[in-house]
Each structure stands twice: as C-alpha cells, then as structure tokens.
Image (tube, rainbow, N blue to C red; front, side, top):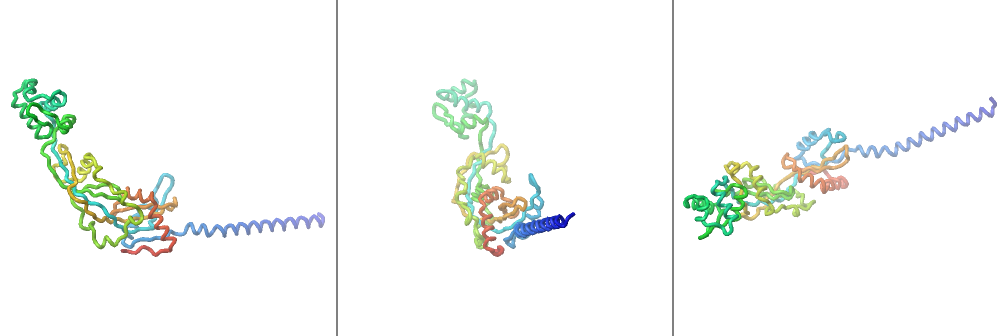
Length: 327
C-alpha cells in the first residue's frame, strides 16, 4: 500500500471517530435536556391534608392501592382533604296511611253500577236488581260513603274520584292514621331524604360547624335544592318503607294515601369531608365526598364533573400554600 493510501485511510478513521464523538455528545445533550422533565413528572404531588382526616386518608389510599380498572392497575393517592359544612332544609311532613282490604262482591257491584249506570241507580233499584233485602244494600252503601267512595244523595248514589280509584284497584282504604316524619332537602346530593326523627343536635347550627368553610363558596348549591312538592306518593311510600318505622303502617295492607307539609322549613348544617384523589396511572383527579366514612356517590360525581375542588387544589400548588390545618 502506498503512503498516500495509508494517509487517506487514517484520515477516514479520524473523520469517523469525530462523527461518532459528535453523535455521542448530541445524545448526551438530549439526555440532559429530557432528564429534568422526567424528574418533574415523577415528582410527588403536594398534599394538603386536614390533620383530623389523616387516619381516613390512610384508609382511602390503602383501599385504592393497586385498584384494577378495565385496562391497567391504578394507584390513587389523596392530595387534598378538608372538612366542610353546608345547609340543608328540614321540613315536617304529615303522611296519611290507610289500611287496605279487598272489595267484597256487593261493594264491587255497587261501585260498578254507580260508574256505568246513567243515571246512577237508587238504593231501591240496586236491591231489586240484586234480589237482596234493601237493608243489606243500604248497609254496604253507607260503608262506602264513610270510606269516601260514594256520595249519597236523597234519590241516587254518585261515585267519587276515590271510589273510581278503589274500583280500579280492587280494594278500599279504611282506618286512616297520620304520622309526622321529616323531609331533608339536601342540595349537595340533590335529593330528598325522609327521616322518622328530627336531625340530631350535632347536625344543627352550632359554632363548631359554622367555623368550617362551605362548598357553596366554590359551587352553586342553591340551584340544586330539591322541591318536596314534586314528590309523588309512590316515592314517599317506598322511602317510608325504607325508614323501618317500628309500627304496623309498613305492612303490605297499609299504604300512604296522602302527604302534606305542616310546618316551616328549618335550616340545619351538615358536615362532610371532601377529598381530591390523584390517579397516578391516568394522570387525572377525582373528587370524593364522604359523610363520616360513607361515600356520597351523587355529590362525588357532580363535584368531579365540575372540577371545582381539583382547581382549588391546583391553585394551592401554584401558590405554594401551606398544608391545610385542622380547624
């Protein structure tokens, strides 16, 4: 090999070494530029935890550690926890509960005749059609009048709206009884809860509860106050059965036939705990509302959708605020 060829080969090797060294430097620079970002992504989320909720926070994180969703395992950590209060309306309601029994054959025929005959028949005509003594027919009519199924006139009988309902359902209501219960209009849950007794004194207005902040400072609660007048008797019937009242009024032969608000609403305060959870796998935030240790699903879903408390938490992070202290 000539000296020129040797010099040319060595020159190429030097050029290749310089190129490799340059690429290595470029990769090193790229690595140093991306390293802070990676480090920032792995940086733990700041936490603002009320000290009175520390034990519950540990329990929540334990329950949600390694929770499996549809795609992957997620880990939820509590980054914000604080106690709040909000106002509910306690409304006294009187419900009328009536015993029910099936119509007997004679009562059913009398109601049917009052509905279908034009003009409505008299007592004497009914007795003649049925071939019964007028005393039995008159006794049955008087019984139906007392149950508000018929309106007795001097020469004929008239069916009432209550009588038409009884005929359609095949039973009559008797022995009405009234009971006082309490409707709690809850704007945070946007629902009405029925209670057998008034709220405990701990949930009424007191100085300790009043010192807490209200979620109403962040979201509009007034627009979510439910209207008790929109409740249907069937809804009250179901709710009253769930109350487990220790009276015979919840047996199958007793149903609620009427309800009426009988007093002015009383404002009471309810305390709740609000938590903001960070999903490390998804990179998003979830708001959770609890009354004591019970999760309020409706309120949690609503506040998560509004993102009000997520924004409050992020604002605290931006301001480098101190952790929330026990109030």
